[in-house]
Image 1 (cartoon, rainbow, N blue to C red):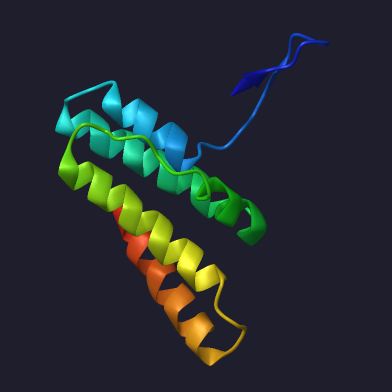
Image 2 (image 1 turned 90 degrees about the vertical axis):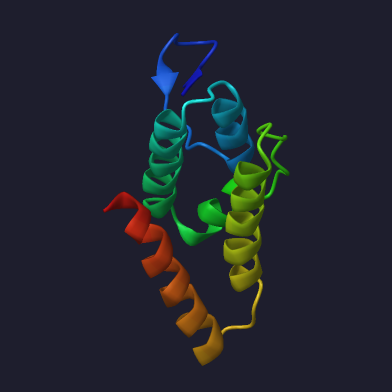
Length: 107
């Protein structure tokens, strides 16, 4: 969430993968980290395809745990890579599979 200077109102801003990494680095609790990761995926899935791609563009800082760093890198590479493919059956198939995979984290 971001505070606007003129109205003092808080506006919604979806979490980027860089924001996600920063939040993950603030805790060592695996349970909390998985909750934060799920929150990111939940926000991500409701955004438009263009916004989804933008959320993955900034390189995330290190979480301090190689496993989490690898997971975030894989997430960004998979989704961003698929979005860059030319339109067609292959892109649709991969996008559907990735969507199903990442939706499974919310179950």
